Image 1 (cartoon, rainbow, N blue to C red):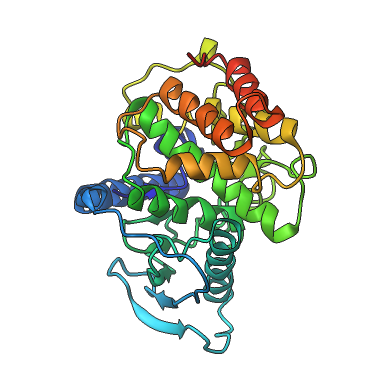
Image 2 (cartoon, rainbow, N blue to C red):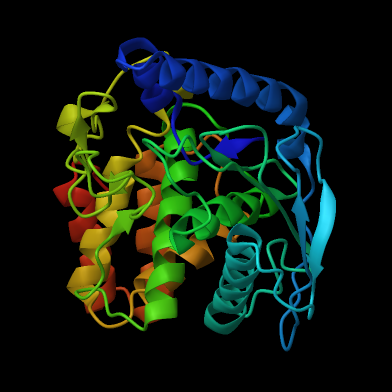
Length: 345
């Protein structure tokens, strides 16, 4: 399974509506590359979950440079423990892979993305002005952006955290990448992408911005980020990007056949549920709310076709097991899902 940070509906809008031909063509080229990658990486979802390990672990990072070609992984430019290259993109990603690795190890005792020491591989400078970054089932890949709408995909830490979490989901048994299960897949990546950033900055839930992809837009783009977990539907409103289409509750759930049934759109609903739960519980969001979501995801009990209600019920059950059936944490989880219109049986 190939999962990219920029949704197809954003690229479609640029390809159809931008007033500059160059940017329309770059968006269309990115869509073509993305489609090809989806076809060739579809089998990655079938990978078996690795047996988890806990305890001390060390990252094993390798960074490659595609030199604007589409052959992966490209030339090796930095390996674990190696000196900085002077290439900003390569060095940023070396650091962000390390931060994400440290987050999962320190917060949840997880040894890398698969729980069993998987080496972390990334490629930068993929294709020419490629407007995306993605997890292809085995490694991270970053384009340089068109430099007029998207200026960086390596800069925002939560982009790397988001995409690597697709790997965590993959190795935890997977979630079908369509409909509500696909939206849960995307939401889990946003949740832990945001938590990686909060962990790195030492922020509490009320201090966090709950934005995904802040810093990737060029000056002049009317938007603060790609998505807002706190206020879905408000991240951007720009003539060249369109308006953020994410709903904040089930009353505005979007029924669509595009984007695998709106996986990047309807993920706003479970995103907001997590944000509500985390802020109600308080403190560092990765410690309680994050643990509830993590333990649920990695329980190997989540059906691959789980809908929002199924996952919500499982998080509520997990909160009860971790903190007590009538605990404030359990009540916060139930209240958060109820607020977004997902009822727990």
